[in-house]
Length: 374
Image 1: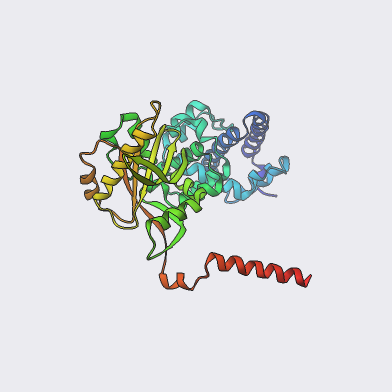
Image 2 (image 1 turned 120 degrees about the vertical axis):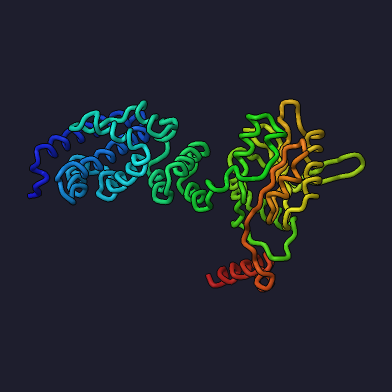
């Protein structure tokens, strides 16, 4: 028999831990995720403390898992692997907020600690309701892929804000959203009111990740435009929450001439139109002039009194940040400039690939042959 299960201190602590979880199960009917995440953090802090301050042995977590699963056999969260993850997750945050973690333990050295909202909000310095509102699987994904708490909390809050699924969260982490968000070169600070400026700048990325499309080396702007529209779901995901697609080659009649923007959006949070111009070349100062013209035209022809000032976004293959800042210096229209990345398909390979029409005909032929065989 394990020496640990005969230890009176362990038996008492285990009994109280079970009672705490039973209480949590009752509350979970109304606040399932919040209560579970709160319970997990308290449990993780205590596991760390018990490992450091008792002689319960190296198999402590394994024994704890077995004992908890006797009373809660259907709770997968008490597997040895998940208890180890709970410990890892709690340690990840408690080392940054060491004084609070010590406070958690010191409030009652014998009984399992129940984290209060007040203590937890001090701990993360963000709204605890937000922190506990994302699922456990999301938390573990973040901790396993992110090395510092500032970046981890960024993904926690973005998950809440955008209601990301676990797959979308993983995509955003892999494409390094944290390093791209709010990094575009803009003149928003000078051209927009402060509240509008901060929100608009935070929405822009640099670079944008368009690796869901592939273009040949000889592609034109319209090819990129068409590909983005063909993959509108992925494109909107990359742009971020709030972008409503209004159309491509949007017609603008100025005087006796007709002009067409590459892409036009309306942003539901900013309450404004957003014109996106695409360039397959490096940044050139003259690109700003054309985009500035489109922004003025949208303001004059499409914008209502209730709409905020139209914003222009220029996406180009490469840019010199100093050159961009210089080009935007004296403009009074809000414009941002970012780079983008996509899969470049060599022309030789593209030439060897069948056209869409050829693939369609081939599929029809196969279907006919299969029907004849039947």
